[in-house]
Amino acid sequence: MPVLVGALSEKAEATYGELFAPFLADPENFFVISSDFCHWGKRFRFTHYEQRCGEIFQSIEALDRQGMQLIERQDACGFCNYQREFGNTICGQHPIAVLLRALRLCEQKHSIKFVQYAQSSRCRSADDSSVSYASAVICSA
Image (cartoon, rainbow, N blue to C red; front, side):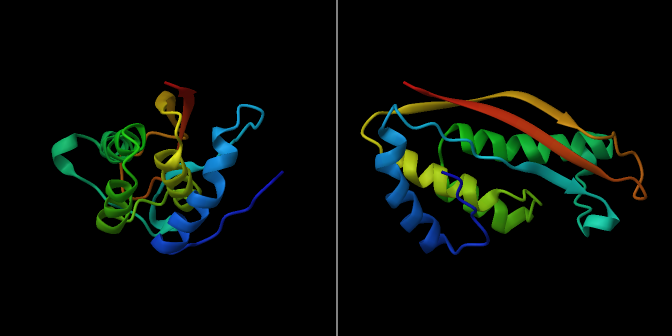
């Protein structure tokens, strides 16, 4: 059953996580949570750059990986704080947060592992733009 998740408050993310947790625990159900990661460039109105990370594309990856680590740790509050601090343009941040909230409530523990990461282009100047993509697998622990 497709479910579209738009912009939600943290309270709503927790509420929906609570609603989905029993379905996530049922092995008969299969969930796909889809999201791009960072949309970087002037056209996206997001140009966060940490010079200490190297070139722009390396800074983008470092920012994305910071979020990915929080997701792998299933740290819903940490992911929310990360979004609040950096404003990374992860378009599926709310479905991801709902998933993290649901996982926390499941009796069966799960692991999350990112298995692939890519960027549409390697940004080297402020005039460049890129979209990042990351895929993860969730397994019963």
